[in-house]
Image (cartoon, rainbow, N blue to C red; front, side, top):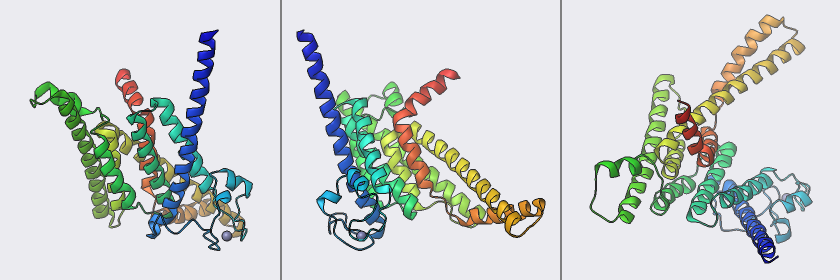
Length: 319
Ligand SMILES: [Zn+2]
């Protein structure tokens, strides 16, 4: 009986703490929305108070409750009835779920703090890049600094930590040397990730004569590397390139099919001619369109954080 009560009490505490973490995530998501809108425009994220982007009407507390306000207002401003982007509710929900996932995975620990910080910054960067094609330094460079700093307290567990102690003993206490190896792992991930992306960007510029990768992507990759270490950084770049290629191919095909149908319907062109011309214009449209690669790097960095090590273990076992 006593054991049953204790179990029920523990369950209640667990539900309560998970709810608190989720609500905290929603609140941080709400702040992240402010960052996503204001940072690329060079505005302060602290002042002035949140206002409708259409009519400038200041948003009261009852219209600023994460997710709930958006649903109750039917996705429209209370003052001018202009639509409020669904992104506001989506970012809040994803941040809430992210915080909850981190907490359920690692409890109330520094690992949870690291994952939540990393995920928070990545979500901000993904949505900023998708909307404005910009990756603000305030997020990437702050993230890089935090990633390096946190590596001193939460081990990165990568190549330096695994290999250096086998060959070299620095003659300091293990608590100190382990922190230094972890920092080295973070530095290695950041520098290799950033250098690789910079190299690819330069190569693309020299071969094609156009800039395929912005310096923001390089800084984003440095940030991701500082949190994940070398192995997951390589995995992130590989997965992001794959995802970007698939998305690019899918976009070209979708545009090609749409334009072919339009040419047949409106211009009454024969099928072969319509397909040929539509293919040429779809290729030109794709070359002009700049794909926000930060979206793919950020998404795959987030996926690598949660599933990367399991995926690498499965890969080595299956060899
Ligand atoms: Zn309004």
